[in-house]
Length: 141
Image 1 (cartoon, rainbow, N blue to C red):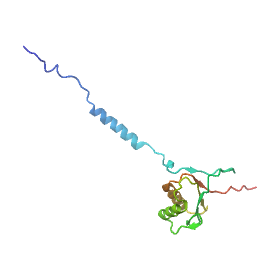
Image 2: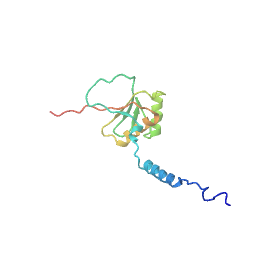
Image 3: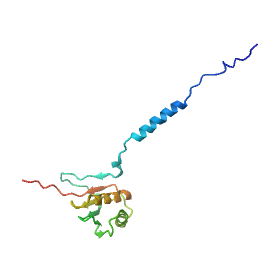
Image 4: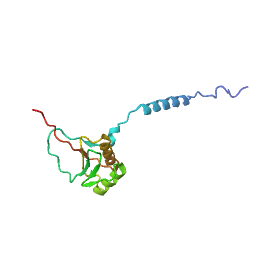
């Protein structure tokens, strides 16, 4: 007489390893193909084309870039044109106030790299209120 059937003791089970592999591949695919918004690293206040009244938010820090790519923070010239020297000059001029508005004034003929270097230094220091100074376009009669 047989008391136990060894075939009846096996219960059906679901093999989840292949399902986990498929889900891992899908997640990996989605992560690699997702495009991230890289422009959100530095928030800019773009200048308006129409003349308007800008609310006074305090004394702005002025960063100038001349035609040759030299930097001026406030009224002081920065000795070197690298990011580290510019960041040190900005910290000396602004102190610990990272909420202070900054106006970036660049000559129209300045190299684009100099403007990007100034914006990069300001972004690394944590300034978020950045305005780029422009002049109104002169209309031809």
